[in-house]
Image 1: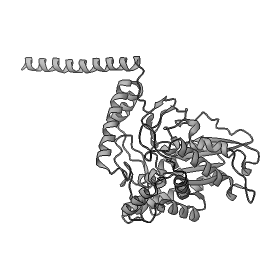
Image 2: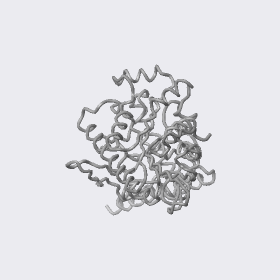
Image 3: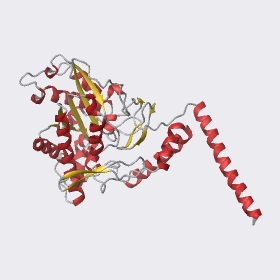
Image 4: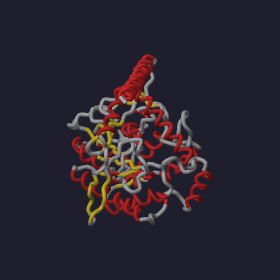
Length: 398
């Protein structure tokens, strides 16, 4: 018996030593040949996940860009909390379309927007400063918490929420959220007697947090994580129809019938109303715009109409229309963009989503998508009477 235990311990020790040695060799080779698959997510006690402050590296899974995360955990330059004189600040909230790790910082729509707005009348000679608070995967609850935690400390003049209805509404429901094992889970809100209540019971175990820490300090663990990610993406592609796009539901285009979807829309409406109230108390304006998914701005109209027939709708505009109604009821401005971007896509036969290393017409905005969204949004903001332009209309800067 003692011999068996001794041999088992020896074999176990040999196995552990072999694995450790393999990891050390792998780590060394990856560093010698400068191979890296950086992970930018990190644990956040309030929101579940944030971007790791100070993290830098190349992102090449979709498009290609060098990412640099500032000290607060956002993909942006450093900003002084104290607003400089003669400055108009715009804080941008959103998810992966705002973080936009697929393109360079200068090519993002919100960065371009700052330059395009510079000559608009509502600035009245002020310099514009854009602040990015977008984090990939954030639902509206996490964006609301970001508004409370970080945005209001910078005294913005305008808060722009760029919603991606294709998964934001679903993400506002713990019941509807798809399996998010690929990243740390986060909080959602629920309505109790008409009042928003934060459900912060999401679980991020110490083991999961330790794994993230190891990934941030080891290229070997980066490689293991990248292998896991690729296997998961392959599984998704094998199990879901390509026409609808991986990980996104078609139910967003229909008036909700299930209790879960009805609740998700009600929570979203309440969150937007709360955000508007907070922004107004900050002395700023709250504006919501909508980001379309790829099929909504497909340049080949027949393909989009095939999806409309598959879903059973005349168009894919229900989310835009409902969010616009929310704005009218709660008193904040909304700039839905899907219909106008559809026209632009078909007239110019341009794909706003997809990259050479993935597939055109799928995924996130490419550089052209960011450019067109910035131009359209700048025109809407520049000519908005809510921002003080009145009847003085001015073309945006080029």
